[in-house]
Length: 195
Image 1 (cartoon, one colour):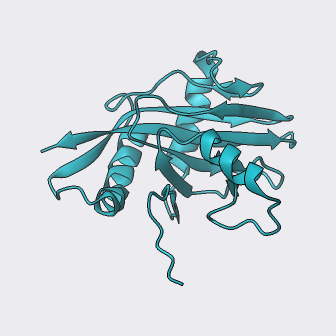
Image 2: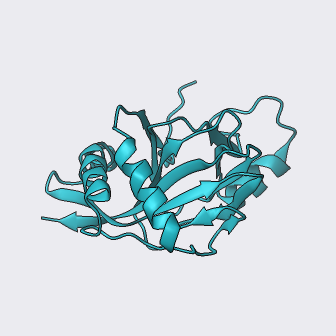
């Protein structure tokens, strides 16, 4: 019997060689004056939005991410004139069992996270299947082997300079970081631009 896969949910990732020092320095500088905000985070710290043009270090990062996002455009089958542009970014710092509850990035076409500092014990990012599909699949019969079709979640381990990108609608969470050291990441949202 043949198997075709339709309607998959893409998650793109890449281990990079980006120089992390400018982003580390910027995060430390912002953290001195920005009390942060409460969004999906329980504990930890999350900066207010950073926009393109605010800082040289984040502008350089945006150029890198936008270049990588060509793969996303190609995978969706859009015209070559279609581009993804970063609309906003923010830093997050979790330690001492801080975590992020399940959420999505409303209004974003593609979202992502980039890891800057990763202590040995750090929370993974976890992606969740659509709850309607999960209800139907898990309620039909006992699952003895989780596959890409039957699995309800998937996890990505944080690593320094790792980039993870995903559709903004995809539900996700960040597991607790038990370390006393900060797990620092930068998240972002992207919008489609037709040129």
